Structure formats: structure tokens, C-alpha cells
Amino acid sequence: MVLAQLGGSITRALQQMSNATIIDEKVLNDCLNEITRALLQSDVQFKLVRDMQTNIKKIVNLDDLAAGHNKRKIIQQAVFNELCQILDPGKPAFTPKKGKTSVVMFVGLQGSGKTTTCTKYAFHHQKKGYKPALVCADTFRAGAFDQLKQNATKAKIPFYGSYTESDPVRIAVEGVERFKKENCDLIIVDTSGRHKQEVALFEEMRQVSEATKPDLVIFVMDSSIGQAAFDQAQAFKQSVPVGAVIVTKMDGHAKGGGALSAVAATKSPVIFIGTGEHMDEFEVFDVKPFVSRLLGMGDWSGFMDKIQEVVPMDQQPELLQKLSEGNFTLRIMYEQFQNILKMGPIGQVFSMLPGFSQELMPKGREKESQTKIKRYMTMMDSMTNEGNLFLKLTTKVITELDSSNPKLMNESRIMRIARGCGRPIRDVMEMLEEYKRLAKIWSKMKGLKIPKKGDMSALSRNMNAQHMSKVLPPQMLKQIGGMGGLQSLMKQMGSSKDMMGMFGGAEK
Ligand SMILES: Nc1nc2c(ncn2[C@@H]2O[C@H](COP(=O)(O)OP(=O)(O)OP(=O)(O)O)[C@@H](O)[C@H]2O)c(=O)[nH]1
Image (cartoon, rainbow, N blue to C red; front, side):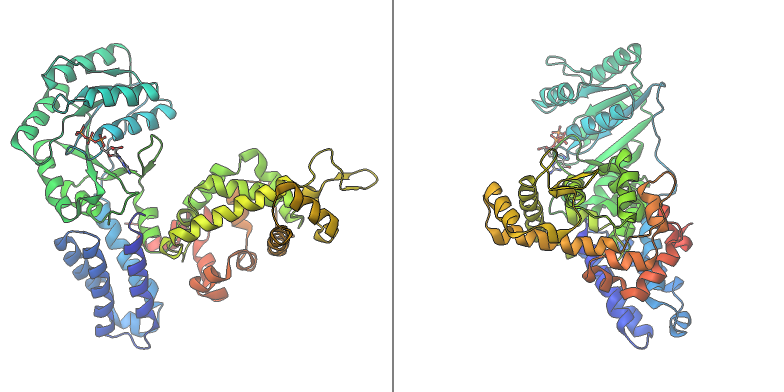
């Protein structure tokens, strides 16, 4: 996944350095060399890496380190600042306004994912209430119009193009005019690509740009182009006024460091990344959370957003209430499993937690745990649900799924469940053991203060390190630096709403 290896290497270099008893110039240099190597291997341009190393050396004061301050944090902060600096050109990209016509032109080499990305970009804005439209000014590649037409039809986005007209400028102008009349507020022009940077391509791009006067030109770059990224991005910038970058195929094996180089070359921010072939495999790109995840520092706000995305708002207060009562039922476990499956790759979600790098969750393991979750859910489907009584207390009916007393799961019930789902008895027992383990963890949440509006971010605000340490997997807790590390982390976090508060000094 996205630069995971780089993040892992940097985290290891920092770890090694903070293990050293005395931090002198040599130890610092070793650490920086290690980080430099990792960046170069990830295809970040040589000059950028060299400048970064010089800057860090200027910033990091060895006397501070010797005085016993948190060495790892000081260097990590410096690396964080430098990477943010590279990725943040200092001015935001143009953002289209709803109800006011904007023209956005896409440029990039053939196969970079330009056409796919145009549709993703249109679809993203459509979901936000914009009225987008697509114009296919790619007359170079046979089939380009059909591809755009197909994508646009799928997303129900109006499109314009021609099978016969060979002049891209004419098509672009006609398309933009048509959609202006139709009051579209986001007109996206897809242009031709070439296999390599050619004079003809740049000339065509320049003409389309002059004729349509785009508010924004987006340079689309394939993340796997490696060290060529800087030069390629610069060549495009010299022909048209590139104002933003979208890096595609970040889901592949690409090292991804080229993205950093492209920003430096175009002095334009990365605004989205493409993470798959499908329409919604498209993520807004934010510098600080990205770098933070890269360095294993976590992205608390991203994590909370992810949770809010999957636990429907109306279920949140109820869930919190139950947890605060220490009432963790099998049904809650079932619902949480459902949520975990909805969250997407677990490694990706965990990488948002501080101290946990994505590299730690090997791909195979991820699949394994998803399969296990699904297996547990199948078994739970054989448990008594509504209408099928488990216990009848005087006023309340409790089903197996709603019980929080595992002792009531006797042998005959276990045998019935195993028969019902066609799994061996030991599997059902394993699932119940897992439930007991989780129930024990969550019982520690008893007494948690429930915020009035009951949202998940408020939950984390009220969590103290004690609560948190009991919920985190032991391996993760160890990574953060045990209870002490967690306490200081939470203190630094202040408000978990914005984990970046932790990096207060990172603000420029
Ligand atoms: N895995 C993955 N594939 C992608 C992504 N973006 C685009 N692709 C694929 O990359 C291939 C090329 O994408 P296109 O959109 O056709 O490329 P293009 O740059 O428009 O090519 P031209 O129109 O010839 O200039 C297609 O197979 C896309 O499905 C991405 O983020 N991840």
C-alpha cells in the first residue's frame, strides 16, 4: 500500500536512534542516512532528499538531544515538518464553487489514468451536490471517447465528444460552451495523452488550455513512474499552468515517492489519490494526516472519521450507552464485526492509529482475520434472535444474541448452534472464547462518561489512558511505549478531535 514500506523504514530508523544511550553526531547521521536511503528507495528525487537532510541537521540541535529531551520525538518532528514542507507548496489548489461555472482540464501521459480519474473527480463532486459534466477532447487515442462515455453513463454524468471531429480544440470549446448553457458548474475536459513527453502533445495541451481558459489544470501522474516523476511533472508545468496534482494507482506496488517529487516540481498540491480502478476508489489527499500515517504517528481524526462513516450516527449514542453500562452482548460483537468489515482493509484502518504502521499488518494476516470474522458471524447467525426466547425474565425477553452472560451458553446450546451453521463444536467454542475476551476488555469501559450528543469523537475525548490501554491490543500498546507512552501520547493529543494537535509545533 501507499508508501507503507517507506513509513516502516523511517520508523525503524527513529527507533534505532532512540535506543542509543548517547545521541551524538554519529548516531544522528546514521539515523538521517537511514531515512535518506529509505526516501531514495521510494523514488523521491535525490535533490529533495539531500536538501531535506541538510535542513534537518540545521534544525535539530544536538545539545537538546544530549540534554535528555525526547530524542525520537524531536527528530520525528523534524522529519514530519520537512516532509510536510515538500508536500505542501504553501498555496491551496483552486476549488470549484457550486453554482458558478468552473472549467477543469486534465493533463497527463497516456495510461496515467487520466480518463478514469476525470470520472472519479466528477463523481466525487456530484456526490457533494455539484453539477459536473465531462468533455472528451482526446482525439488521439482510438476508444478514448467510448471509455469516457461508458464511465460517464455509469455515473449518470452528462458528456460530450465526437467520433468524427479530429480537432481537440474544437471539441473542447464546443463541449465547454454546451455545458455552460446547461448551467453545469463543473466542466471537466479530458485531453489526449502520449506514451512519452512529445512536442505535439504539449502543443495540443497548450492550445486546448488557451481556448477553454480553465480555472484549474490538473496533472495526473501514475505513482509507479519512479524517479522520472520530477522531470515529467516539470515538463507539463512548463507547457500549461498546472495547479494541482492527482497521483493514481497508489493501490499497486508503486513506491509512491514520486508524488513528493511531483509536488516539488509543479509547486502544486496533490489534491486526490487514486486507489483502484473503481469510481469511488479515490481519496482526498491531506498532507499532515498522510505524513503522520507515513511516520507511524497515526491519524486520529481520520480514524474517527472512518468510525463515524461505518457506525451510523443514530446508533452511536445507543452503543456508547451500552458500553458505559458494561453490557457487551454478542449482538454488539456481531454489529461491530459488521462495522469492521465495512471499514475496509484492517491494516489501512489501523495505520491511522498512532504507533501502528501499516507494514505491521501483513497482507495475508489481514485476509485471515477477515475470514475469521465472517466465520464467527455465520455461527452467530445460528443463535436465537428475535422471537426465539433464550431467557424470559418477568418483563424482559432476552435472546442468545442479547445476553451478556456467557455462562448461559450450555452444552446443548453450543451443539445446536454448531449443527445450525454446519461447523465443528470447537469452532463455536472458539468464537465464544473470543466473545469473552472482548467482553472482558469492553467491561473496562464501564463508567465511561457519556457525552450528551453521544458521538464517537466525544467518546475518545472522555477516554483516559487507563481505558485506552485496556482496549488496545497488547502488541500495539507495546509499540506506543507501554502505559507511559500512551499517557504522554494522550496528554499531547489534548483533544482527540484533531490528533494533529500532537504536532503543535508542526504548524507553519
Ligand atoms: N489500480 C488502479 N488502476 C487505475 C487507477 N486509475 C486508473 N487505473 C487504470 O489504469 C488504466 C489506464 O487508465 P486510463 O484512464 O485509460 O488512462 P489515460 O491516462 O486516460 O490514458 P489515455 O486516455 O490513453 O491518455 C486503466 O486500466 C484504469 O482502469 C488507480 O488508481 N488504480
